Length: 75
Image 1 (cartoon, one colour):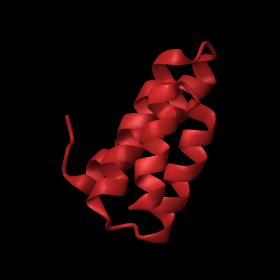
Image 2: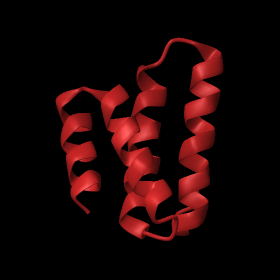
Image 3: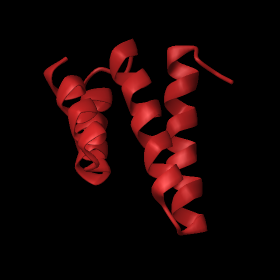
Image 4: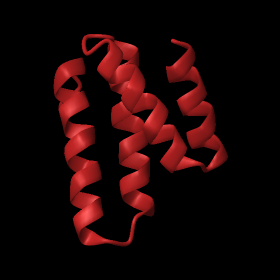
């Protein structure tokens, strides 16, 4: 929970790269933690919108989709 909260704080502050690292650790530590998966989807989604590289956009979108599926938040 601490990693999830801190990753969201960093994302809100604009440090999406570090936020991704922390939320990734949280999601991998407990793959069924819904809060971590939802935060991971949110942060990777935000990072996707900020990215210019088409390849990176695809990678970040894929990571967000993975977490949405685990959390049951598929769109």
